[in-house]
Structures are given as structure tokens and as C-alpha cells.
Image (tube, rainbow over all chains, first blue to last red; front, side, top):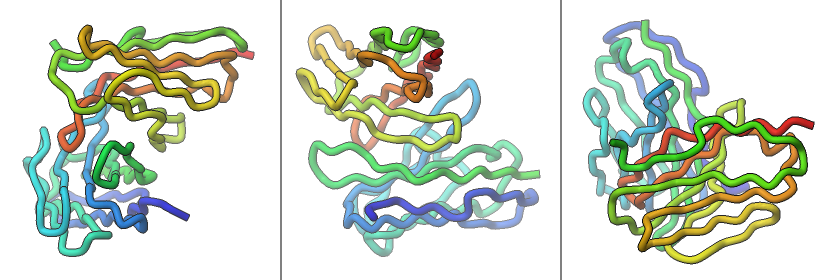
Length: 112
Length: 106
């Protein structure tokens, strides 16, 4: 089944403890992207990648890192999480050209 | 002013009604997306448009590039259509509307 898989689905962590949210797609898509969704602010883009080793900042990149060493994986790294990074995170992927995105199921992160 | 404005914010309809959700944007775009988010939180891409009109089942999406406006129509609405519908513009650097919460009552 074609899908974008995010892990974990839920995570509670403490301030300052490094964490990684994984994202993997099995569709050989070139484009991958991370978003966060907050009440009242909606969805905002964190980082995106156009292909292996090509990444760029979205609207809210502060406090996040990404890497794209393989086409299928696009992990989101929080080096020192803070409570304002408590949010619902989505990964998405798409193929090059005029195609829509496929979204992962989301990761609900709470930083205490 | 947000780059992507949706209206209405909330919409309640009776089953069977024809529904229209509007999206206006202020930036030049390469693509416009309509997304659906159910109460469980998952997001599904319904349409991606760069011109004209697309139809999938009971859903129709249109875009007017000159007027910077898009509409999502749902014909013969059903309670299972209850969800938040989100308009987004762009490709790599997507900008999102705030969403329209649709409730369809039986």
C-alpha cells in the first residue's frame, strides 16, 4: 500500500531531551515536507526537501533540523525541544510534477 | 491579512444539500490544493489545481486564476463529509488557509 509512515504517533518528552520523528514513504517521491498544526494558527511548513541532500526552510524552521540522506526518509530532529514545540506534526510527500501530496497520519508531540 | 483566506469558517448543512467553500489568495501560485481533515486528525489531499475544474465523485473544485479564487463544491452532502476542509497554495512552500469546519446533519 502506498503510504507515508510517521513514527511515533504520540510522544511526551521533557524540555531539552533530543528527539527524532521519523517519516518514510514507499512511493519513490522526490518531494517531502514537514508541517506543524496548532489551534488558531493552522498548518505551517517547517522544512521541505526536493530530493536527496536538497532541503530548504519553510515558514517556521527555528528549533528544527532535517536531513534527506535517502529518498524514502525525511526525519525531523528537535535538538533541544521546548514547550512551544508542543504540536501536531505531519509529514507529506509528492512526486515531481503537478501531483497532490500524500500525508502521514500525524505525530502528536507534547513537550513538558 | 493572510495570504490564503477561506470562507465560511464554519458551515452546518442538512444531508443532501449542495455545499460551497471558498478560497481567496493574494499571492501568485503554481498550484492550489484542497485538503480534507477528519476529526481523527488525518489529512487527505482531495484536489490539486492549476487551472480550470476537477471533479471526483461528488466533489468539484474550480479555480479562477485571474480572480485568485477557488471553490470546493460538494453535491448531495452526507454526514460522512463532516470534516475540516483546508485550502493551500503553492508547491514546495505551501501556504494554508485556516480551514472550514463542515458539519452535515442527517
